[in-house]
Each structure stands twice: as C-alpha cells, then as structure tokens.
Length: 292
Image (cartoon, rainbow, N blue to C red; front, top):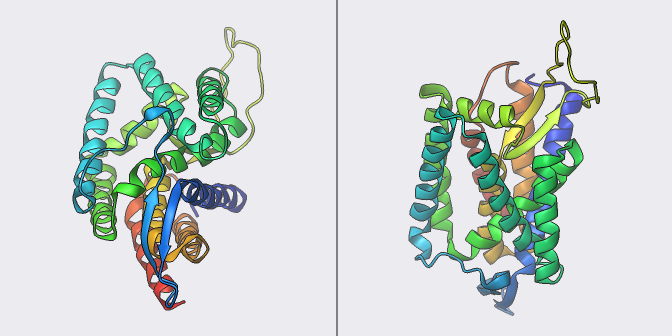
C-alpha cells in the first residue's frame, strides 16, 4: 500500500469531492439545454460566457485535444526550464495567475464576477504566502472546476477520449522513462507551491527557526498531480452534455474506486503514472453509464 489507509481515504475523498464540485461548476455554466421529450436524451447544450469577458479558445470540438495537448507540452517545457534555473519566483508568479484565473471562473458560477475575482486573488495569495493543508486542498477542489468550465464546452467525446489516451502514454513516459514528471513534482514540493492535492502524513507544527545543531523536520506528503484530477473531470464534463448531471455522477464514483485500488496496491516509495489507471477507470465508468 502506497500510503496508510487513513491518508489514502482522505486523498481519495478529496479527489471525489473535487469531481462533484467540478461537475456542479460546469453545470452552473449551462445556459440552455435541448432535451428530446420522448427519450429524455440531451440533444444540445449551450454554455454561458465566462466572467470578466474571458473567452474560451476558438477551436473545433474534434480538434480541441490538440490544443490542450500542446498546452500541456509547452507548460511542461517551461517548468523544466524553471527547474534548471531554479526559478522558484517565476513558478510562484505563474501559479498565482493560473490559480486566480481558475478560481475566479469557479466562484463566478455562484457569485458576482468581481467578488469572485477578489476572493480568488486572496485565496491564491494565501496558497503561496500563508499555505496550510486546508487552504491548499479546499482551493484545489474548486480550481479544476474552473479549468473544466473553460474546456468542456469546446470538447466532444472523440476529443476527450483521444486526449486521455495520449496523456496516459505521455504520463508513462514522463514517470517511467524520462522521469521528468518526478523532477517536476519534487520541484513543486521544494517550492512549497504544488499544483495538485497534497495530504501531509502529520500536521506541521510551528517551530523556532533552526539554530546550530538543529534540523528542520521534513514531513512526507501523499500527493496527486493536478492533471490526475483535471482530466477525469473533463471526461465526466463532456459526458454530462449527453447524460445530464445526476446520471453522469456514476463516472466519478467508478474513477474514485479505480484511484483507491491503484493507491491500495501500489508499493511504498515508488512513483506511478496515475493517468493510465484513471483513464481505464473513466472508460469503465462510461460503460457503466451506458448500462443504466
């Protein structure tokens, strides 16, 4: 087992909550839904605009996976450059703007846009300068919903399936072959600004500044990368276009079970690419969805 049962259940529980909250945020952006009265099938979904005049990328639904994949690869290259030159400040600045953007979109699904912006900026600053387990993980629950509200409307089933497959292959290469995903995770942990879920094995205690002969205590954490949270949410969000909010909830349930099984059978102190397993669970969840 990769982590203790308690830590595993907390991590998996927050993952599941992020999926439900994310789907709720996407659902709030649905402006109009056309449903076949006979079959109950959703024929067409129209989404409302993003807050503060933000615009979604103008790409064809069937080709949207190329845009997102390119963004992932370019982002990875930039992070690797930051790692090489120890660019902690630039990483924190990038993180601040990304979190502020996603949280603004997420919060604006429920409250007025400018209030959402102010709240998002405050939370993003707290994540960087006054980090805590609660602030970090609660905000992460909303971040991916904001991100999904950008991309779900411009994707179809073909695009998200292809994206999951390509990202899964990339994840295996990045963890098992090039190992740059491991470097990125360690860099983010060292910078104390991590894009993803992070559950410490114990709550850090405030201690005096280490003096001569004293050692700073290093606390191990169970982590789950942002992509491992965001991509299955995109998949469920795209399926929600056809099946509706309540019915599609079976997908995050199945994916959460799949994630738990991965963490349960994984070996301690080893890195695993989560996306291949999460992708498989997504497809199983889709199969279950078709049967109900």
